Amino acid sequence: MSEALPRPTVLVVEDDAVTRHAAVAMVTDAGFSVREATNGNEAIRLLDREVGIRVVVTDIDMPLGIDGIKLAACIHRRWPEIGIVITSGKVRPKDGDVPAQGRFIRKPYSEEQVIEAIRGVLAPHR
Image (tube, rainbow, N blue to C red; front, top):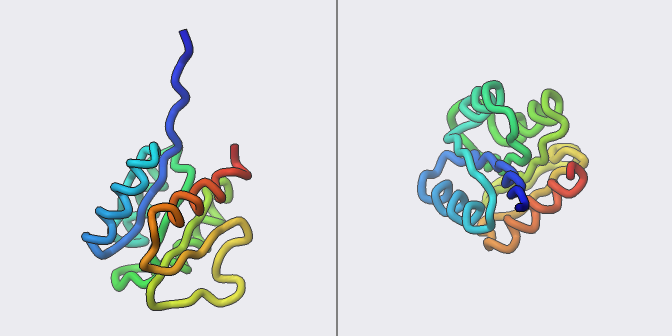
């Protein structure tokens, strides 16, 4: 009898409820376990108490608390083993804003783009 491998957990950080729910559905449909946060501060609190989050997918432009660029930098510093995917339809990250192993995708994004980016940042950590 084979034991099922645990599904990697992805944290989706997005202040817009419609976009967040769509992203959560995409990631869930691709077979990942998903957590969600509405802003960067909530994401950091979740990362502080939950072990096992392997990838964070975050929007850049979030009005409450820290933005996605600062969140990515914090995650890269405190949890370097977590993959980071940054998204935005408004802001384009400058050189150095996306951590070395991270990915940036522009909104609107397709399900394929999101899943490919998640798998891409997961690969070095398998």
